[in-house]
Structure formats: structure tokens, C-alpha cells
Image (cartoon, rainbow, N blue to C red; front, side):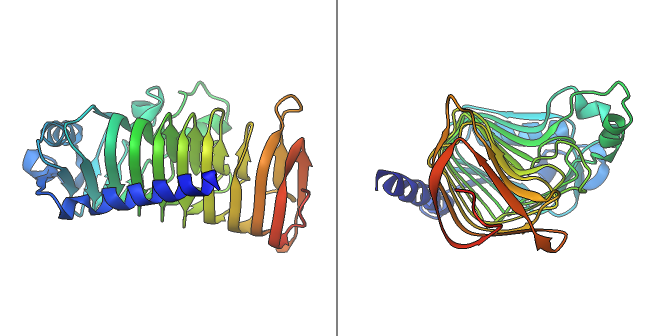
Length: 314
């Protein structure tokens, strides 16, 4: 019951964030006014930083608006703390440099860092990862690769309506965050693109992921250590590896449909020293080449109900 109350609290908090701009006067900062150009060629990184600095110091809740068009961005760090809530509303497409080395050794492309009360909504992220994948595929000396959008130490976060295309590494990363709602996000990359996890969550508490379509080359959702109160529902994933995790506890997988890149669609390979506990599977439908897939469970405890394809191993 406590877990359910916590999840409801997170949802109410996120609804408050989404609706708070209607209760308080807001300041809007259009990146065009700060010199950004929507031609996909001009480096708009500095213009976005100037817009961010103005929004971050605003005494009122602030909105950074990115109009339609294509905006070339190099690695960019939206750093806090800020004075008030910030909404980043993207109507256009953010485009990475064609040369994968421009981002590859930074580890990130778009980073939101040390913030409270942040909403990021809409738009496309085009990371142009194909060159980096080729480098990895043919064994050349390659950079580490950039994660497309990373949230580091952000509390009270809503991410909605974003479509991420062809990330070098993971599409969306939640790291050391609290009270997070991710909804209606799409991640798209070819089946053979390496390490292109759709959503990666680590060291975070109170994360809801719902209504997302994750058509990427690696894990749909990867879960690393020290992640608590994670709720996942209404996910369409494939052709990647599905969802994977390290030391999972009290996690519900609900209404997940899609295809698997391997015959084994569901794998819980938990540590014998720290087994997975409190796992709940409900209404899962994953296939392999239009045939029934399999599932494997090691060192896991939990329950299952509803329609389960493949047959549950719990």
C-alpha cells in the first residue's frame, strides 16, 4: 500500500508541475531571440545557453521555446540550480554534428544538471549516430559515445512527447533523480545499433515510465543499481533486447507489447547474493519472428497475472 501511495504522490506532483504555469505568471524565452538559427547548419549552442541563463535567473517560472526548424547543437550542459521552475518546449528538431567525434568523448549531448522542477516537452532529437556505430562495428579507435539526453541530479522532472532518433549511445538517461514522470517518449534506432538503450535509469527514486515506444538496438529500458520505486507501464519495445536490470526490487512490468531480437524475450538474471524481489508481471506480449518466445528467471521472486506471452518463469 505504501508503494501505491508513493506512486500516486509522484503522479500528483508531476501534474502540479505541468499545470503550475497557468497559476503563476511566466516568462518565455525564444531561442531565436538569442541568435539561434533554424537552418540545421549554424551552431546554435551558444544561443541556447544564453536563453537558458536568462530563464534560470528568472524570478518567475520560465519557458524556453524552440520554434519549428532544425537547430545544430554541440555538447551542451544546462546547469542549475535555477531560481524557479523551467519548461523547455521544443517544436523543432535538435540536430547533432555530422562528425561523431564532436560529441563522442563528452559522454553526453544534451545534459540537464542539478535542477529542481523541470519539464521538457515535445520535439525531435537527431543524434546522427550512424557514423559512430560504424566505428564501433569495424573495430576502429572510437570515442566512448554520447548519450542523447541526460538528466543528472534533477528532482521533480517531467519528460513528455520527445522523439529521439539514432542516438550514439543511450537515448534518454535518468541518473540520481527523484520524482520523475516519463511519458509518450519515442526512441528509434536500427536493430543492429550497439548500446542504444531506449531509457536508462540509475540511482534514482520514484520514476514512472509510461506510454513509450522504444524501437531501438539494445535494451528498451535498462535499470542499474540503486534504483527504487520504479513503475513501468504501456511500453512498446523491440527490436532490441527488451528491458534489463541489475538488482531489481518492487518493479511492475505492465502491458508491455512488442518483438524480441532473440528467442529469449524476457531475462531476469539476478545476483544470487542480492536476488530480485517483489517483481510483478502483468499483461506481457512479446514474440520472436512472429513465434512464441521464451523467458528465463534466475534468483527472482514475484507474481504474475493477466495475459503472459511468453509463459512466465516466475
